[in-house]
Image 1 (cartoon, rainbow, N blue to C red):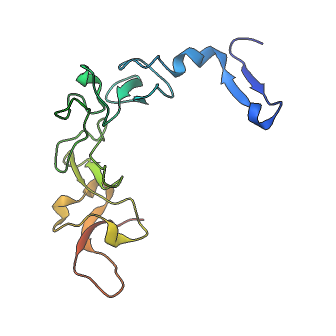
Image 2: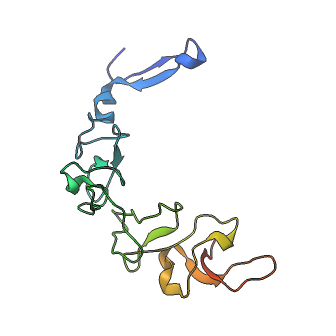
Length: 168
């Protein structure tokens, strides 16, 4: 077979494999931060298009930067113990690149708001609005993703406002 052809081996369901021999070398670099990639990088790195023209291996949030903080998902944003960090509420972010607002407590509770380039409150859980982050005004919510500070629909009523997505 030619180098550009896909090889398909399906003798047993467990033995099925699809592989493009031509691009195999591009799938992963050995795990060096900054190396180019197309699909994945070896742990603790992740393959992302992050404010550049090529996908590269970036150091994941929460992992040690080992002297290379420029390759953290949020470059040079590190903790005191030398780990790559996410951005916190109201910190400046770049909605086209560094979308890594700190959502450790519950994924999706902070998003990079495109309008003012700051990490704002949001909620990806649409099934129960009362679990969305509490707010006092729309200024706290990710307006570019249609989140507004509204009273959640709660059985028995409730006075707490939450950042709720208005278009579902």
